Every structure is written in C-alpha cells, then in structure tokens.
Image (cartoon, rainbow over all chains, first blue to last red):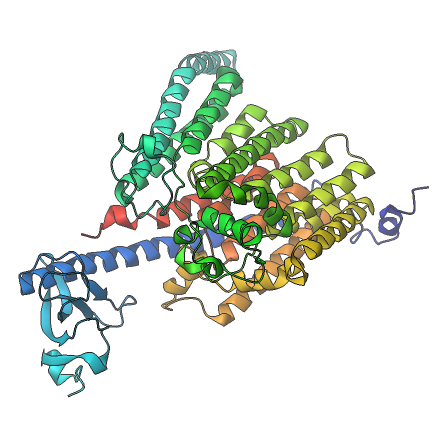
Length: 159
Length: 445
C-alpha cells in the first residue's frame, strides 16, 4: 500500500477518463492534431500582425523623412533638432513639424511649425500652412500665432 | 531500401561529416564576429542602443564605430543566421563531427566578449543597483520607493526614465542578493552584476547539459541551442538581466526531478522553484505542473516550506511590502511595450493600442491555456513541456514584452519531449527580431 503522502490512491479511485496517467496513451494523436492546428493559426496571426506592424512603421518612417526634408526645404534651414507630431494610425495624412527659426538649442528660439499633408513625392510632402510659437513653448493651441494657409482657415491659432 | 541507395546515403554522410567541421567553424566565426561588432561598437557609446553608463568598457572604445540601428540589426540577423545554420548542421551530421570542446570554446568566447563589453540594450541593471543602494547606502525600502528618492546618488543618472518612480518588482531574495554589491560603488556594482549574470548563465548551461543527458538528448546540441542563442547572449547576458538567475534556479529544480527522482528531491526541486520565484516571480509557473505531474505531497511540502521561509526573510528585511508580490505583478501587467504581440494585434485591427478589455481577454486566454496544459499533464503529458508552453504563453500574451522574456521557455524547450515547443519558441524569437527591423527598411534621416 502506498504512503498516505501519495495521490496515487486518490487517482486510482477516479474513472478511467479522469484518472491520472504516468505517460500519455499512444492514441492521443487527435488532441495533438487539434493543438498543432491551433498553434499554426496563432502563429499565422502573430506573423501577419508583425508584418503589418513593420509595414506600418516603415510608412511612418518614410513619411517622417519626407516631413523633415519638407521643413528643411521650406525654411532653408538644415537643422537636426525638429519635432514631428504624426498621425500614426492613418486617420489623416497631416503631420506637424516644428523647429527653430534661428540657430540655437531646441525650443530656445521662436519656432516655426509647418503642416505637411498628402503623399510623399520625390521625398517631400506639400506644406499647406503653418504658425509660429514663442520661445520655450510647447505646440499647444494657446501659444500659436501668425497662422497662415490651411492652418488659418482650419482655426489652428486662437485668434 | 536497396543496397545501392544505402551506399549513396552512406557516402553522402561521410562527405557531410568531412566538410561539417569547416562549415561549423565558419558559422561560429560569423557568430563571434557579429557579437564582437555589437560589443566593440557599443563600447564607443553615444548610441541609442547603449544605455547611458559609467565607463566600464572604455579600453574597447577605440576599436569600433558608434553603434547604429542599422549595424546592430545586421549583426543580429547575421548572428541569427549563423546560429540557425549551426543548429541545422548539427542536426544533419550529428554532434559526433563537431567536438564538445569546440562548442564549449565557442560559448566561452561569446560569453567573454559580452562580459568585457558595455551594458547592452537595457537600463535594468542600473535599476537593480539603485534598489540595492537605496537599501544599503540610504536606508530606504526599495519596495516602497522608486530610485527618484535617491536622485542625488551617482547611480540615479543611469536609471531608465520610465523606472525612476517605480518601486522594485523583484523578489526579496534577489534584492538581498544584490545588497552586497551596493557598497562597491556604481562601477563595482555593474561588474558585480555582470559576474552574477555570467555565473548564472554558466550554471544554467551546466544544468541544461545534465538535464539533456538525463533525457537522452545530445547535451552538446542542448547547450549550443541555449548558449549561442543571439537573444540569450546579446540581450540576456549583454544586459546582465536577473532573468538568468531565475533560469538557473528553474533548471536546478528541473535537474533535481530528472536525476534519480525521490520524494526528497521533489521537495527540494519545488523549494528551488519558489526560491527562483523570490528572485523573479515568473518561474512560479512551473510549480503547478510539477505538483500535478509528481502526484506526491513532497513538492507541496517543499514549496510551502520555502514560501514560508522566503516570506519570513522578506518580511524581516522589507516589511509587508517585501512579500506583496501580487500588487507588483498587477502593476507591471498593466504596462504596454511597442514590441508586444498584443500591441501588434491591436494595430492589425486598426486600434491605436491595448485597452483594459484587451488585458482582461489576454488574461482569460492565458488561464484557458494553463488549465488545458494542467489537464494534459494530469493525463501524462511531459510536465516540463507544459511548463515551457506556459512560459511561452505568458510572454506572448503579455502586453509588456522584452527580448529576454522570450528566453524563459528556451531551456525547457530544449529538454522537453515535445519538439513543437522549441519550434514555437524559435518562431516567436524570429518574429520579435523581425519586428525590430523597420530601421533597416526605412532608416530615419
């Protein structure tokens, strides 16, 4: 008889379909087939999600490069420190790129923000308007001034 | 099978065994060169991939160039390809053609390269040191305060921004293990952490060897799969992550159950799992499978005994917060990383990210998987494989996924009786690396 510390007695009292086993029965191939099918389906879902994310991020980077090039081309300044606010999930193609109007540390000069929209053509996107920001200000509506182009008609500035 | 066909296959095998060592040597060189490039370029500093760190590898700085995303990803892909090639080669010709000594030398070189280099890809090690210094140097409880409470301490500047206000989520055994390193200063503590990670990795490899032999799996192949894995070497060891200590405890427990099983060994194994969970809680996932598989009271007794001892030590050292693992886990479970599969699936369905309902769905999915695996284990399925599937499921369903999390199931996958687990673990690792590859396709100017 086994020791009281064993679960074996308890297992022996269970019906066959519920009883514990030391090893799997050779005929458990059907369970394995179902598991493998589910695993393959999950694998396909994860692979599609990964590829989709990489494609999404690649488009974002492509558009980001075009936005930066458009800001530099429009202002004539080859500054590195620019901030870009992107619509990452494709609800619109509108991005906002801000940078200093004169050389200096980030946000330590008056900034010009440009609204870039539309498709990337020759590494650039169309600049439809923009506004200015005072020194040391975040791009919040209350700080914006001098709106022009689409930014003026769409009411990006407070007045 | 005809004699002629047997003869052709035999001669093919002889030819393969002749060129196998040369090809294996070439692949090993690629693996070493790619790892060395990451370490040497990383030692230059000023890289988005290398955390701000005290100068521990300054003497290497003159050799490489600044590590950029592009060169890093190319090195990771090259080492991944070389690693895959080595495993395929070993499977084709068998370990006989590639000596045990050669594999040990390769793993030794990879470990040495990463050990002498800078901390790679993560600021976590500085959080470990900050928590240790909070307790030892400043008399603060790391389970109550974040590193921001020691903003004047030299380690603070190296702690990741996201973690500056976060109290430790690690177990009391790990926190106490890190305490002796605190008085060594930041540089001394970083080296101490590196030594701990190296020792834990070597221990895990030795235990994987023993477990593989106990299961009639080629031990040379087993340690190569683990010790040359690029994510294990570059992310795990490179970041000196405490996950390696958890893995050592996990494999210690598994080896106790595999080598001449007895009630006493089962009890010790369960105790070791609990001790590992008091380093990092994830490893506790093994315990229910061990209990269901052994069908003895011994593992329960061992687990309860260690839990009681650990809780007492944690309480004496850190108060009630030192043993409140659940709230720390709940807090961390709410985090979302860009690399998590949950986040990727949310994007696939047009959502900006993971919402609270998604967390609930993921938890429910994980519970269903665990219940199915427990039932399968009860009915004779390999408990080591079931535990490995659970660790893989935890990492896949987690909204906070980091590279070293997908190392958790790897040692179990290597020694499990279900080869599907190893394939699935590799598939997840490949998808993780693929997700990092955007800078190769569209680098930001």
